[in-house]
Length: 178
Ligand code: 5GP
Image 1 (tube, rainbow, N blue to C red):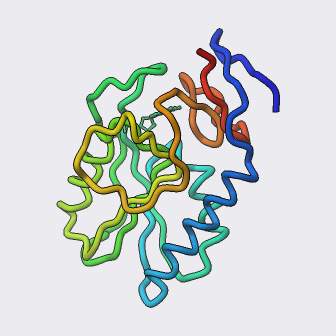
Image 2 (image 1 turned 180 degrees about the vertical axis):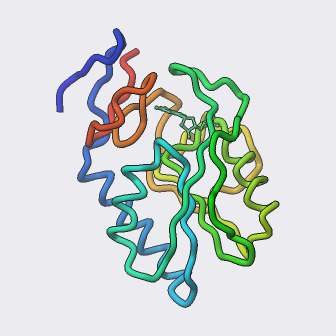
């Protein structure tokens, strides 16, 4: 892994795919332990979740369904604080065990909005699992049930996460160079 540049900003290698995959396997096993007698619906938040969702599903050994929705709160490397629904879940999740899969939880604004949206859909149970979590940036009381990797409050790209639309296809995670 080498230092990279995206739109004039430098990023340093931070988490290699092997470490990401290890965390995902652990998450998939923990969730399966809890839901092996159920058919949960994994709800992914587009676009950042694509790589995580794909690898998570490969390691989830049980029966499950998936769905997606799209929200937005970031512009460049700064959160705007305003969460907008761009695309709602196209299936009914009423009465279902739903697990929100997030690529990253930062301030928690998106998560709180997401939690509200899904609770209103009368799900049977709702849990939150995130691959990356920034504990120093998190400002909410809502409990994040499962965290893959906790990271410092610094902007990261790669493995589905973008900087102004770019860098999502990098297989590893890079951190902004300060
Ligand atoms: P929050 O609402 O928790 O502040 O931010 C959640 C969303 O902001 C994430 O789903 C993700 O799209 C974006 N985000 C937060 N932190 C980062 C980061 O370090 N890098 C990238 N690329 N996106 C981030």
